[in-house]
Length: 227
Image (cartoon, rainbow, N blue to C red; front, top):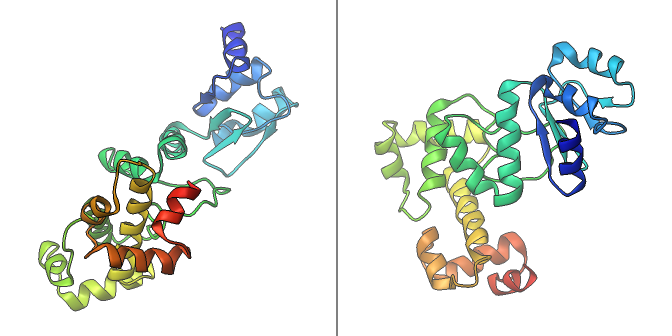
């Protein structure tokens, strides 16, 4: 098994371990000189038995030179979602997280910003549901009146709770969602500006261009050429 792991890694395969599975990678000398982690109750043991490793405590998972290690069983879910996000983007990762009924938790050294993942470090489940709706229905006319009726809250209470929980108004958050989704759609050359407007719920192409310019400093067409 160890020979297979070593061969797989050196031929370009990315390796992942969950919980104490890090000991297997360490025994194969694949963690020598690399940052790694394992279950909190065995981090000291991993460092002592394999002194060439650089064991990290107090983190969900670690990635170093194509090798991922996670702190525990549930942290393996966090790790998996991070890999999905890295390869297929935060929108896909957020959809999978919703299906799993989990919220994406980032590792302590993960600084990449994403509207799908940020603004959720609160415990207001009602507002989480509103955020989920806005994320998965950007094309809908999500007016304050419709949202308040859908989620059984008064407009005033919904407005107050949303701002308190996320730090943003509903309109600000919805705009960021639309722009982020538009950004992902723009990467596909088959998507025209008109089709993106419809899929993201913008009023028209003019609104999309104005908001894009305001947030990114360039036009959608310029962004497409950069990508």
